[in-house]
Length: 293
Image 1: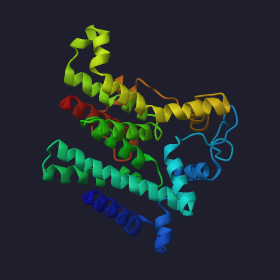
Image 2: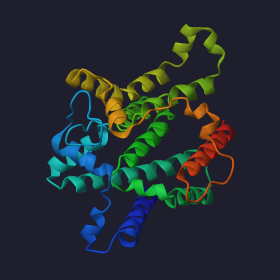
Image 3: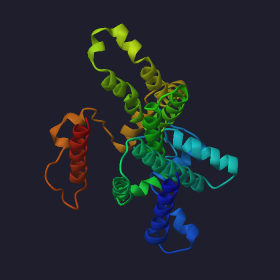
Image 4: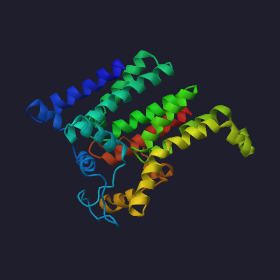
């Protein structure tokens, strides 16, 4: 917990004191509100609203159902409950979540008996990555990562209370980012690997052997499912989020991208080519996944 707080404060000091534009401390801190943060602020201040079908370009005043509800929802509690500025509420939530993310990072390292030097190296690799900025800025990344690591931590622990905590983290996870629906399968996948594949031959025995993992998995999806039900009841389209993303951002999801060779890169990427860097990250991630498996 203390190490997580120290790293979060280090990130804040680096961002506010070294990277932010010149000006008073309050102004420097406010520059952590960027791009998507203004959409979250719009959702906190005005709630969700859209026309059907969504407008065909980015216009938060017309269609803002382009983000999942957990992050703006928690920020709204701080905003209205403590009577603080919306932007400040978003930053407080993100930075508390960053503290939670780092805390779960070290808790998982401790559970897996990772040596202190390797823990430090792992933390530094994350801390020095350019995308670490999003952990303390007004974005939902830190909340999602905290919920994800918490979900992994509690769902792999023993005891009924642990499963309840896992379910709560899972609900927050899937209510923060749509990929949380896929991540909800973690306890079931883990259970299958631990207990073997033989029970697949008998479906009834399979469900019985993995009942606890299935319950946690289903509970974890309730955050996203609740959002989809809300969209269906209000606008008659459960997928209004996807429609808004496609109309405003031109996003066409490729659910099979992980299986396509074009998603990977085996040569050193150019420093000025973020696409190649992303492909290299896919390659390294796949190699690490295979090594762990």
